[in-house]
Amino acid sequence: MLGVHTVSSFTLAWFPVAHAGDVRAPADVFNEIFTVFLVLGTAVGVVVVGYTLYNAYKYRDGDGDGVDADVERPQMGELPTGGGGGKKLFLSLTISAIIVVGLILWTYVSLLYIEEGPSSQQAQQQALDNAGIASASESDAAAQAQANQSGELDPITIDVVGMQFSWQFVYPNGHTTTGELRVPQNRLIQLNVTSADVFHNIGSPELRFKADAVPGQETDAWFVAKQTGTYQANCYELCGSGHSYMTADIRVVTQNGYDQWYDRTNESGNEAAGNESGGNGTAAGNNESARVTAGSGPPTAGSGPAATQRVIAP
Image (cartoon, rainbow, N blue to C red; front, side):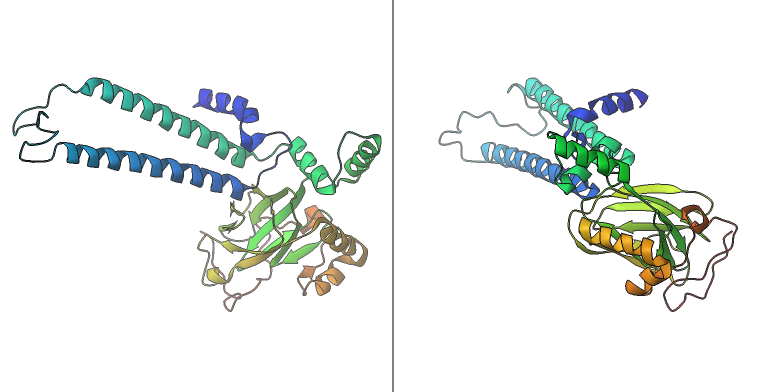
């Protein structure tokens, strides 16, 4: 397994999923895997069924007249002979083995990209592409340097805290929202996920990310939203009577729209920004002080009719 991991890591640069400057969304990677397996599976099915029908027709029971009169049909209790069966079997097994091994390696490399995430170079190149900055001219190089200094090219890291029965999101500047995550389009988003009480699991089927929320531990996930709009995130770990109400909206906006909103959270503070976004903002000092750790007791629950109930962790 270590050898396969080493070879797969070395070949990442040669596969489309890891092309330099090409940050692919997890949804695109999973859709590509599904499409490839669907096409190949359909092709194999057509070949197998077609070959079976062909042989069934060729060796059908007839009156012995016509072009198939000289066909030596198998007799009851006798093994068929001739026909180059050994060569056909060897050829079919060899081709099948090559296809299966190739699919396994390709799928492993694709999932390794999902597991490890894009490199910082890929993330910065993606941000440059979003901003329309090329590295060829001096003016673009200056703009790139300025963007690097301001942190506009870095991935956006957001702390996610699960609690019965809501999700809390803490931005790099300490701004905290409950039940809504606002992110820019075509930007690498990294999530650090933990829990304040019991086990939870956050995921979005449309954005194809999923991560456990464990008290006292952090798990990470990432995604890239290609289209603006509102996506839903759910809890996928049974966590109490309000589990089905533990949802959050992921609002994807343009980069300019996100920058304007984020600047307002810096200028007006968390409470004012929360009122503007629908009352979801709460006061939080900084990223570390806003993070909820295990043992500090569950904070006030979020939404849902059963939000006041608690499940005691074993």
